[in-house]
Amino acid sequence: KSRFWQQLARARNNFTEGLGDLFLGKKAIDDELLEEVETRLIMADVGQATTRALIDALHQQISRKQINDTEALFETLSQLMIERLERVQKPRPAPTEQPHIIVVCGINGAGKTTTIGKLAHHYKQSGHKVMLAAGDTFRAAAVEQLITWGERNQIPVIGEPGRQDSASVLFDAAQSARARNMDVLIADTAGRLHTQGGLMDELKKLIRVVSKSIPGAPHEILLVLDASIGQNALNQARQFHEAVGVTGLIVTKLDGTAKGGILFAIADELKLPIDFIGVGEQIADLRPFDPKGYVDALLD
Ligand code: GDP
Image 1 (cartoon, rainbow, N blue to C red):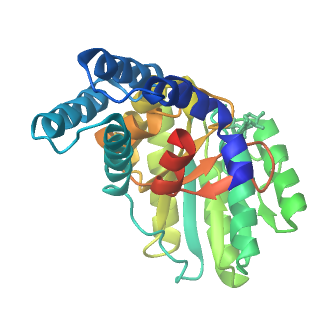
Image 2: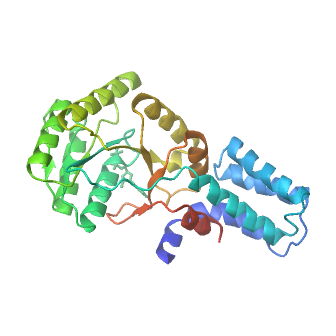
Image 3: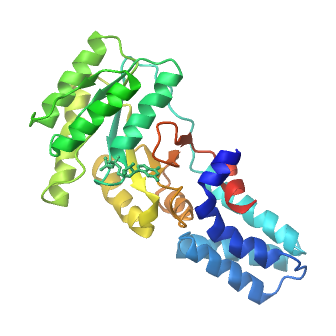
């Protein structure tokens, strides 16, 4: 918990330097205090709509005398924040099919390749046989990077630099994963094409190929989002979700940003579960997302 706390220190500071200090030594609740809370939430990128909803809920409870002092205000705020995240969470699907196929998408630079490396580690640690598919054939470096993550995890990678057709890489990988009794196949995909429309068409094609090669697959379509780009992450998520029907999110770079509030805006607007968060560049810096732990780390 303490390392997690440190990793989230920046995201946390933005909230608590404001909130903690605000409440410190103050007993009475006034409009000025509530306005200040609102400003801090907006600054942390919680987003207009979600912030409004939180502040309205606080006002309501204050007028009903359910909140009488700043301590209760703080408690209620953190409870409301936890609830907003929890209501869209779902348990992670267990890899019961062999192979359980996870397609990972996201814009270049979001942290997709790194996240796949960490995710492979996560599954391997829990005793699963894991394979990677280098489906981002549009960027030679992406294939090499994925091969390096494969070596680091000591797991097989299907696809090699120079191969052009990502659909055939994914098809081969699905066949190979089945033949070799893999528990989990994690597939990388392109993160940039000439046009955004082209990228979405490519993704749809890849998903069709995967579903044709293994009935029921892909079992998950995870979208990697960079928290540090704030509200832009929301726009990206909307586009991907519309195009391919994302099943869950992985939000990266929460260690290096003061914009940790974006998770609330994402949960509220997209109603998609956040499966993992990235809190650093190392292989173990991926956490299953726990709303209470997250809010506690932000506000405690
Ligand atoms: P891709 O283009 O989406 O595949 O992105 P990469 O996986 O290459 O990551 C882009 C940069 O972000 C790299 O320098 C990564 O080390 C870094 N990165 C990825 N995830 C995290 C994270 O959770 N925290 C931090 N601080 N850096 C990250």
